[in-house]
Image 1 (cartoon, one colour):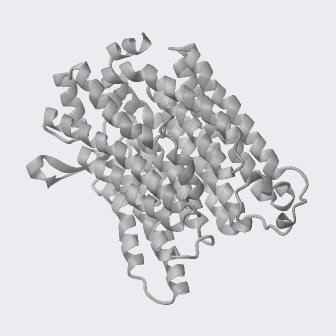
Image 2 (cartoon, one colour):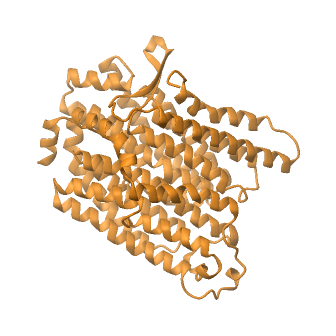
Image 3 (cartoon, helix red, strand yellow):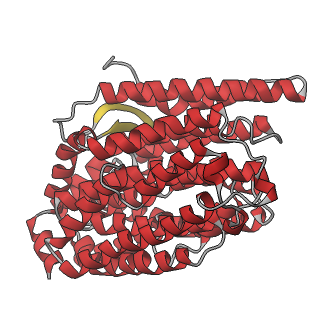
Length: 503
């Protein structure tokens, strides 16, 4: 199947499904049922096609594979250019998998504007995959910014009481930062004469940019990627967005959209601006340490389950940004594994909250207690992802964190020590949450008739449970395809940059 345009099929098939849903007519119940079915089959086929991308991927080749290239805006030198490497491959699979999961998980929880709801998530699927496949900077930017539109609608239409405020805050924060990223792209385009990302990188290395210019471009990119991660203190939009978003929106927001910033650092900042990246590495480490410690302490003080998990995401992504700017393979590969694990685990934790919210319509921790008695399957599922979140050995959360900590320890024991506090504080707030919600006597009247997980909820959790365990016990399945691409990235950074980062 090497001649098939697999990446284009995976990217744009969800748009075809969205078009079918748009044409559905009839009674409200019939439209809702058919919209769910089309969204499910479209997202499932898209995921199966993404598995073919993995099957046709050669893990020993460092460059981009399954490349598709065609003229687009020829007068400006802009091309339709798609491809994947060992870094982007996993994010494509993560995006398509989580779309299937949220469609199944929201089968019984969404009853208003179901048709538009499913169209929005299929559009999200297409744009998320496009970001990770795009190898032209302008094409990347269109996908990168296009994601804001369906997520803005998902929060603003199907969100909570303060959904309009949260949607505007999310949109403005992320859009304003991305304007500077566009400026950086245009400056590099004028310098290199191309918008193709691999060619941009090669020409920048061949010509050599002055460090002062690199610093300016790095800050411009940082303004966008730091908000997307989000790094402290650019994180304030995230708790509001998560609290007000519907469960499925929170799953994709935490599972995929927060990875766009880290992916941007790996695809643009590090390979294109290596000296500036090394120069600003201590700055990134400082912000990351503050994020890990500060937001973990804030999470300990939360009474809202979704807000607690939202702050935990900022802390976990602090580990990611430390790993990205650690100049060795352990740190970079650990950061990628941490992003993949966080995408699975945080998405699952938001689904865990959504299960009980659909039943009693409360996210307050104090509203629960003793659910192990009435919901044993739910209690087991919650326990597994809680353990993965705190980095228990044998789960996905352990692999990424330990690789990053060991990697950064080779360069700074202080940064490693502060990064390790994230595991300790994470255990504190997650165990506290689990104890309050699951253990104790089932005495609250509102909980006595609560039912355990439905069939569709069990099906939605099943692949996440399997992957959280497989990543923990067999990490080489995910690490091996990364090695060649990460080694190539480190070669682009260069030995001199590594030495500069150590000072």
